[in-house]
Length: 63
Image (cartoon, rainbow, N blue to C red; front, side, top):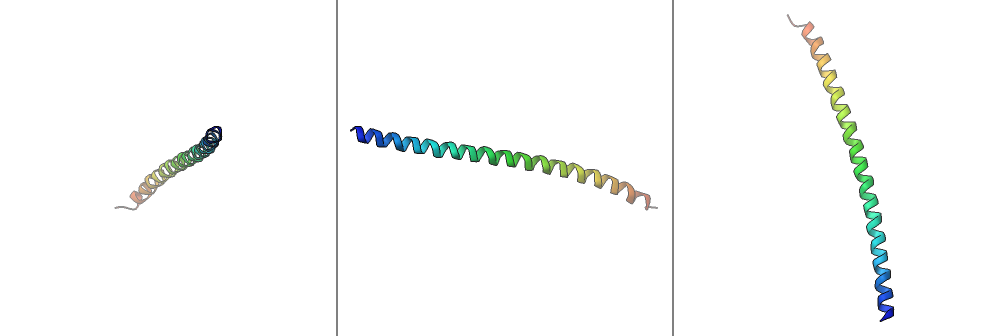
């Protein structure tokens, strides 16, 4: 009986470590996605500004 308890305890420890590792990997992935989202938002703002400037330049050529 003690051997079964010890074995179950070891299995629980191994599973807990796997869960901890998975949670760490998920947290890192979330950080990466957040960074990428910020970068995408910055790029979108830059493109909007560029489009506005380009539109202003194009208007100069209209008669």
